[in-house]
Amino acid sequence: MPSLFRHPGRFRPLLVLAGGLLLMPLAAGDQQAEPPASGYPPLGTEVMVPEMGLPPAEDPLALFRELPSGPAVDTPTRPTAPAVAAGSAEPIAPPPVNRLTVMLDWYPSPRHAALIVARERDLFASRGLEVDLRTPADPDVPTKLLAASRVDLALTRQPLLHLLVDRGQPLVRVATLVGTPMTALVMREDAGVENLANLAGTRVGHADLDGEAVLLASLLARHDLPREALDSPDLHFRLEQAMREGRVDGIIGAVRHLLPRALADEGLATVSVPSERFGVPRHDGLILVANRERLARQGEAIARLVDALEEATAWILEHPEESWPLLATAEPALDTPANREAWPEVRARLSLTPAALHPRRYAEFERFLVQQGIVTAVTPVERLAIDPNR
Image 1 (cartoon, rainbow, N blue to C red):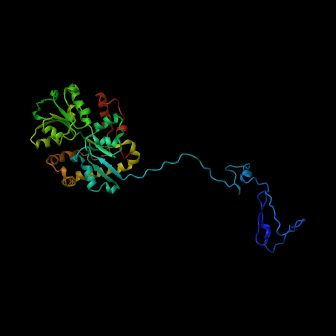
Image 2: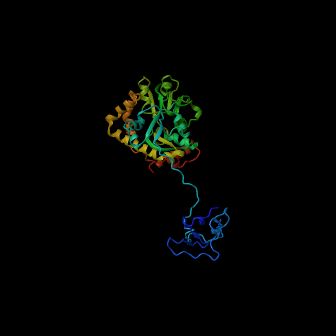
């Protein structure tokens, strides 16, 4: 091993004592130290530097392991360092959601006005949102796609929400677009049904699960009729066609402001009975529902969307002469005689505060369903509906 002593004029080695003190070599011109009695070794001699009590190389810190330690010890060789606490890592915040897919409950209709106006007036875009409105292939599809996380939001009715939550679906109401019932029993005038107690033997079709399981069940219970007293085929989207062709005598759950007028335009007279008349409590007619399991990630974006709906509804009510032309231009299929006639009635029913929740209404409707044996147990309101701003 080369020794630093071979070239004393080039190096000024530090001698380290075991106690940690440093002995500095004398600078040039300083008085030279006396050589040891035995004299210096001849030049070129290999010099072995003693290890001065250092431990074997495989554990260079063994010398210090017996020294005091802890937060009160602060020495040049063992400076105080903050302790490190081991624990689970903080969860990584999910990226912000800026795109939302909304599935309508039916073909575009006047009751969807707030969504259409918010899109057309860039109220979603101004809040950093890209909202995709989609039309279902079947009325039963929207809530199924939502439960399967295939869409982000869906439109439905309060009675159907209660049914699906009772069946274990992770759905929750986040906004109300129409705060009053819109459904009715629509019967052909030539069916010969003079009062609801005479429905036995008729065919009353339905388009949605809640039409049969809630509305029809309530109607039959009110008039003490068994379920077998009438036939109720599932008509899906073919309500008008089934009525025109005489395949059914009536439809339960039809939109009371639209179907009667549409059939009248084709020469078919009907009689309508609002759902409240056969014992169904007042409820929200059109609601926006989300997947509860995705609320933590989507909640902030949903709140922004609902805020846009509130601004859109206010604009609709403040601009009655401009609102319908905007809707008809954005969705030309809306511009029918039945929709134009229904628009003032539907417009008056739009919710001015979509986020606001009516807890008692949901609690009372849930109790009604339990009393009728339609659901198995009372579901707490907080499992059914929330205000996204809270």
